[in-house]
Every structure is written in structure tokens, then in C-alpha cells.
Amino acid sequence: MVLGPTGCLPLRVVRFAIWYGYACEKKGCRGEGAVGGQRDVRSKWGKTRVILRSRQLASHVPETRPMNRASLKAMLGKYGMVYVKPDIGARGIGVMKVAKGKRGYMVHYGTVRKRLPSFNAACKWIKGHRRKRNYLVQRGIVMVRLGGRPLDFRVMIQRNERRRWEVTGTLARVASPGKPVTNGSQGGTIYPSKRILNKVAGRAAAPVLLNRFRTLARRSAARLAIRYPELNELGLDVALDTKRRYWILEINTAPDAKPFVLLDDRSAIRRIVKLGRRYGRIYDLTIRKAKKG
Image (cartoon, helix red, strand yellow):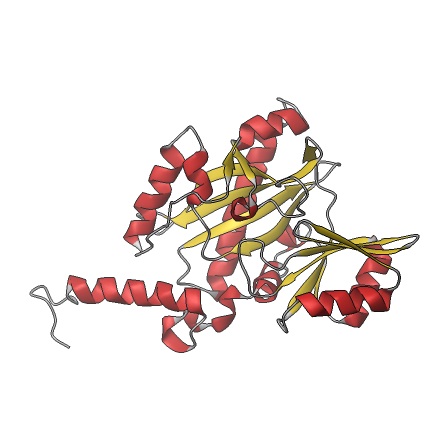
């Protein structure tokens, strides 16, 4: 390979390497192109296992297991309500809420609520909608709600100019009516985090909780970067329960920046885009289904 006049790689080669690494992360390539040379960077279970090695983070992770009949039955028996989700997936696609009741089981998928008379019937229905993908079962967190709809928070963290982790934005997401997930791509409504925390936790607690969300993001990034040293950005989905405990629902390695466009304060999206360009990330910022709160 021909080096540039200063003995460094030509800029076009560096740009291609950055782009190729990101493209492989998105597609789950094997080998050197994937982030950290590991295909499982997209795996929710793989990232969960890494996070669980930290005592500071483990207490904020809802119990999660690879899903099979035994684990689903055990988790429903233990918690009464769980979420089942694809191990590799995005935008809330394929996520189902499953609850055990006195008269059988209720599965909530998209806007469909299906009551099943038995565990066997529930398993059969779920199997018919999982499309042969590997799934996880996660303890269901009873989230705080706004107008009767569940809500959670997205925390964006990126490598900055000094390669240090910087929280570049936070926002709140409220589920579309009738849906169990809050994603903007599923029609969720986007709000500034502080405004929602003021409503659901009070003005005194709001800044404290927001700082704790940011701390969770920094600690998660530091822990994951040990396993995946080439990571440049993460999007944490953080839930607040009715007892004001906060939980990491999942961590995204190619987070969607579109919802930040809907915030009146444009500083977050400007910073996100600026840092993304530094490591070759070009964001699609076209709003399709998300709504502004």
C-alpha cells in the first residue's frame, strides 16, 4: 500500500476503513470489519452478559435469559409479566409483552392483544410470530406512564474528539396508543427528558435521575468498550419504574438519531451529527412515524 507524503495512510483509505467497520457492524460481518472483530456486538444477550460483569451495572439490568419453553415458564412464574424480544433486532420490531393471569395468558404484540387459555397455547402463538429468530425473555418492568401509556428514556453517548465517552443527548419516549413499545419508529411520542421527569418524579428528583441516567451510560460504555474497543456510539434505553428504580432495558450499538430532531433544543442533534461524522456515521434524519410531544 502506498503511504501519503507524511508516511500516514491516505485520507481516502482511512475514510473507507471507518465506513467499512461501521457497515460491518450494521450487517453483523465476521472478522476484522466487525466492531472489535466480534459478530455478537449486535446481540442483546452478548451485551447483557458483558454488562452483568459490572457490580455497578448488574443491579440495573432486569433478569434476562435466552428464551425457550422452560425459561419463559419460569420467568412468568417469577414475575407475572415479561417481554420477549429478538436477540438481534432494532426499532422495537418483534417485541411482545406476555402476562400471566387468572384466566390464562395475554400476549401484546403491536396493537394486537391476544388472550390464550394455556401456557401451551401462548407458546404456540409466540412461536408463530417469532420467525425462527433467537429470542430473549426479560423481566417486565412496570414503567411509569404518561396518559396511561408506558414511557422510557433514550441516552445517547459517543466518542468525542479526544476519544472519550460523552453523553450527547437524552430524550423521553412515550408509547403510541395501544402499543407496548416506545420506539419513535413505532409511532412513539418524543419529549425532552427533563419535562417528563418533572411530571413523573417531581422537580426535585428530575435532575438527580437525569444525572444517574448519564452515569449509567458512561459506565456501560466503559464496560462494553473493554470487549468491543472500536465502539464509537451507544444508545441506552432506560426505564423508570413506579418505585423510581431505573433499569437498562437494552443497549443499541447503532442507535437511531432521528428522535433528537424533534426536540426544540437543537444542540443535541447538532453534536450527535458532528461526532458521528468523525467516525464515518451518516444518520438518516427523516422523521417517518415518531411524533413531537
